[in-house]
Length: 310
Image 1 (cartoon, helix red, strand yellow):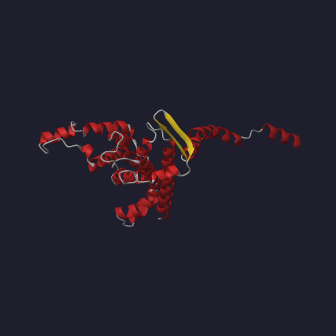
Image 2 (tube, rainbow, N blue to C red):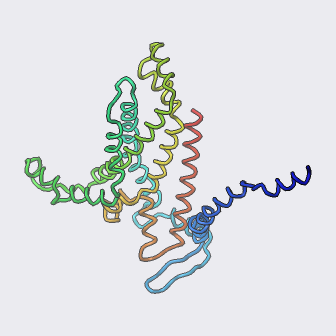
Image 3 (cartoon, rainbow, N blue to C red):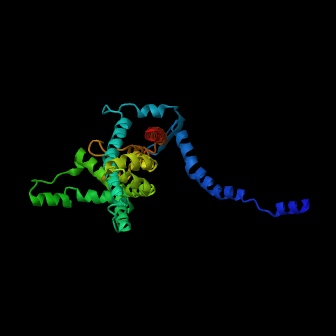
């Protein structure tokens, strides 16, 4: 009997190891293409390493010298990384606030059992379509539309609303508004679909019970929908914030990479990109990247803890 049991044990296959084998490729790819570059970025941030013409300076160890330079005022009297951080958050808030409001209203509208909207798949597709357009193409479209010779100015002049063409791309308010509008148009559809999925995952009997008890739509939203939707909302909010911190392509294309007017639309990633241009200043670029990582981690943790606690 013991021999038969031993034979069965030898013939049996342990499937536990196959799980580890299947995930090995992911860890290999992650280590080569993500972890190693991250470690190299942190390493470079402590070195003076850039190109001056045809000469390569460094790498020379400078410790926290690159970080000190980031917080040193320039010739104009302001600290670039502080100003560009403020710019980035202003642009994100201008696009994110209407994005969440409109997305939430649309999600409630399409998931309402009272309204019972028909053709939801069609509307989901239409709402999501702007998200499929490349940000650079979106920016070029708006650049052409709102330039001095663009169709918007042609309509204004033809209607007699102005005597001369308006330079929308030279005014802080209009440039920031256009960037926020493009970010809103590209991402509100994705946010709407995620919120719809979260609402549809809530047990319908809870809503029916609340209605039978005489609760208003506002009471149902704040006491049932929003608390149960909070995990999805936190995910959407944090990913939106991370995307806002990494904002690059829309303002880069719209302002030709210089953050016009007067650097008021220059974002953190655009600032980072200035060190990776002709000078190839890997030390300063590494320092900016490390600060971006720390900022993102702190803000994400703060938002998660704050909203989850409430």
